[in-house]
Amino acid sequence: MYSSYMRRRPARSYSCRMSMTIDAPTLQGGPSLPQERRLVTSIPGPKSEALIARKQAAVSAGVGTMMPVYAAAAGGGVIVDVDGNSLIDLGSGIAVTNVGNADPHVTAAVIEQVQRFTHTCFTITPYDGYVEVAEALNRLTPGDHAKRTALFNSGAEAVENAIKIARYYTGKSAVVAFDHGYHGRTNLTMALTAKAMPYKAGFGPFAPDVYRAPMSYPYRDGLSGAEAAERAIHMMDRQIGVDRIAAIIIEPIQGEGGFVVPAEGFLPALQKWANANNVVFIADEVQTGFARTGQMFASEHEGVVPDLITLAKGIAGGLPLAAVTGKAEIMDAPHAGGLGGTYGGNPIATAAALGALQAYDEHDLLARALELEGIIRHELTALQSTDARIGDIRGRGAMMAIELVDANGKPDAALTGKVAKHCHVNGVIVLTCGTDGNVIRLLPPLSIGDDLLREGISVIAEALAAN
Image (cartoon, rainbow, N blue to C red):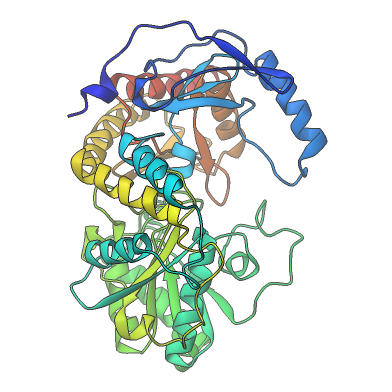
């Protein structure tokens, strides 16, 4: 099944062409790329350095970049930069390229759609791709109740619209998010997001009537799921008032907040409370969705059935698409014209989504995510046994993380930054996260090979040993 992804191909030479003033390798992306870590220049190489200078002169300084390289091709488990360096991808564009870069199902669907038409605006002249994606999401998301879907462009836009829908349906205005949560960079989603830097600092004031409840964080609070839920519910009852709360929104596994997996029972208790009190339970599955955790959606690990679920990232193999899917009576509440947008459910993106959904099924990527978890957990546990600075290993499927701490068990952001930098200059793409900036997160594409994954983790081990 995975031979096309996992076969180690011999290195080959790449022809070059001129792209403006910078030479860039002419590469075929997708799983045909040699699946290897290969450094032919320092990181960054001269061509990336030239593009860095051009970026500084042309792009807003507010748009930062983590890696000091520019991509030329990607596929399987690697990204090749403009200098010919091949880097192990343990980030998947922040859990977007779950099916890999340039998956054949996605590229074929996109090419076919581009040749037919690129845009009409679904709210003006609709097309069948939008409806097909909605039907698929209604079928795949948790729960066997009647559902409806609306499509948008980004995760933040999906979250904004989920809040709009919940407020309209309940006639209430207050919204509760959770400590360490991340929900986007728009004004409302910044209000929902917990972390100040770099997401909120200097950008206020934010949307009103948004509140924050304590999250279940087993490594830090030591509470059972029931205890943590009781604490959160008590806060909502006493400090906000259930008669004012339209919705609670929560990531089943927190992303930017540190890959925090709540204690067992926490999410079901919140859902039960919400259902009993006319509070819409919104699961933000923008990062956790689409096979990432070993289930199609992370809510399924504890049998949680959200009223609304927000989706994006892994939905369309790298093209911008997002969705809100949920109970029909809630989704149908807003008046006609109340939901939509110029590009929401763009026909090229919906074609890509249908291709990606085919890839999830045909490659059995749910099972593959669990296989990757087994490898990652085994390697990280062995590493933790010799390095007490790895305070916690957590996650599900191909969404795993280590929390790094100092000798007193306090968050060690400085060490985390050093580890990430070492990985980057040695050809491994890793991401950091956590409210305190002390978590290394691993989000490999589900198309990565076993040996390549182990090699990437070995570089993390080298980074820890060197620091």
